[in-house]
Length: 92
Image (cartoon, rainbow, N blue to C red; front, top):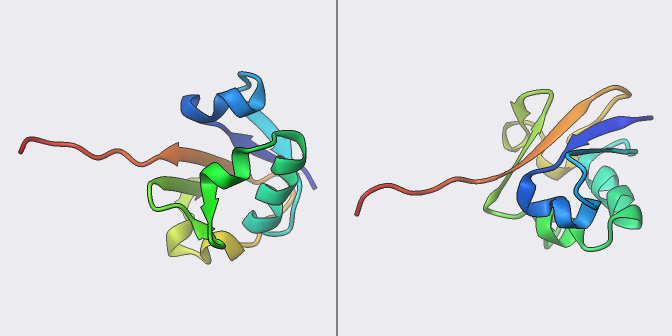
């Protein structure tokens, strides 16, 4: 099962500069473990303690996975996963 994973600029050092990579897995957790086998270190930047890191947003086909099943969200062949760093800011 092929899943396209779009990688943000900040994590492209783990993917040799690639903007998108392919991965496999029935859930996001399995997908991230699969990515780790080819892109060492990337999983730890996305997942902490079995949950998505607080400042990382993950979208499955444009749906925020935090409103689905989080890291246990099911995947199907042809899905697209986008990883984005959370943006914060404003005037103090």
